[in-house]
Length: 152
Image (cartoon, rainbow, N blue to C red; front, side, top):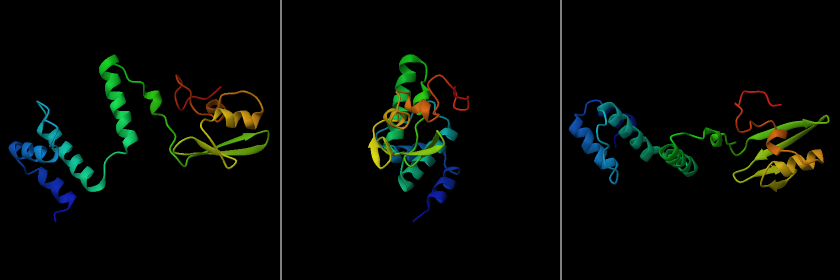
């Protein structure tokens, strides 16, 4: 069996007709876009070979890309703010009145004090005893502010 690296290296030696044939073999239901350059065709085929061998993007990432494509098509703009998502396993640490508080990001929600929460706001309320924004309390960027901009 030929390795994926060897298959990708072999693409450089294929004629445009051979590359189109390889495209059809790998992308059965997707037509070859008109005017696609040979270089882009090789890169796309290489991606597909790797995807088949090692797995593709996670479903959540595919959905996010589809959402962005649809948004770009309909409005001509992209809302990239929604892309700022915390990965499961991330630990948010906040010191409040001299005591550290740690929240773990889960696949669905957050864990604090061995309890599951759907959002950060009830956690911030439990810690402070007052109504406040959970994302702001933990220093996460808010819509309209850059990630490296200081929070006020």
